[in-house]
Image 1 (tube, rainbow, N blue to C red):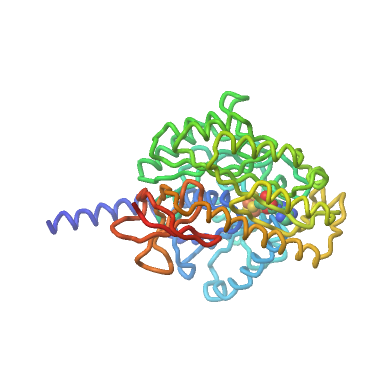
Image 2 (image 1 turned 60 degrees about the horizontal axis):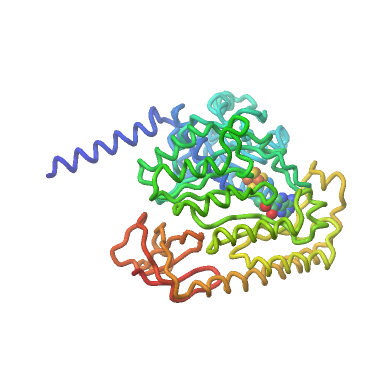
Length: 460
Ligand code: 5AD
Ligand code: SF4
């Protein structure tokens, strides 16, 4: 008996050393911004691991610290500059420690980061991660290390990410990169380059690997998944969703982000057809005013958006819908703002991410439009939409009381050891009594109570 246990431990050790083969130096990575960045960090860990870097969760142990950054709003960048300030003391203690800025801020600021931030040794944009091992070597020998070339082809298709999630239940799978939409306010087309889709075979292989590793849920990721297009129409997003869902009927399939202009009825019908594609769509509207949508170059009107919602509700009556909003975009009037409030009420969003407009250098809006809404008005309007969304989320959750949902358990509640939390297919957090359930179980939970943020219930 004892022998078997020891063997098991040896086996695990071997597995780990295989995972981090030849590992000598230690890599710590910190991720900001969107889910795409989370997925990219897992790619980066994988790329560097092959070159002898072990991943560490302890920053003090690191020989190399990478910060995977976001440029979406000015505040996102400010946060990262503050973080760099905090890292100064680490570098003082360990002079040979290297610090790299990767991701969107690296792409946007390029050499400036090396010139102005003495702390930074390495700068790598989102399409140049394969070059990281070489750049780290250059930095080790004291040379400037930068690669911010964007690519039309790179999808890192065959690289198996090393998963950094804690629970082993839910994983991100990147299906495309870049964005061609060119919304007037958005920095992403400049930081992530042109849109390109990943080979469906490599996507399905990655999902199969996850199934083998006992993952229960995958989220297919892209800036605009509705534009997924392999081999000039051979595989579109609806086809990819269907192929993924068919791999295993127990696997939950999610996706993000959808785009109102491009979301087809075929996609909506595919979600409706497969029980394991979750009934939840994140469909950013940004504004309820057609005039503002036009200025934002979103390519759709208020009516078009409402039509998408009606079609979703027709085919998937219990579909949860969330959205993104930007408040105080150039020239936004009280009338436009009221249009945003009214579309929120009309849809009855289950959840929303809400932001004040932040002008980003080099975008169409920065070049051609004036950021003319005063800060106090932006703040007041933002507070109004936050307040309304709070009510809408609460209303939506109250409607769930008495209903039963299948919950995929993600972890133990922070507030109580005796409670577990997980998500319903609609992506709502559900908390319930632990009993004998484990992380990764599917549990039917009857909702008995709620707040605007959480459903509470009993397993049945
Ligand atoms: N200012 C404020 N919010 C922005 N977003 C994108 N660009 C900006 C900007 N310049 C928001 C949008 C997008 C989300 C990811 O971030 O709502 O959907
Ligand atoms: Fe931030 Fe957008 Fe880059 Fe994601 S793609 S990290 S949200 S700027």
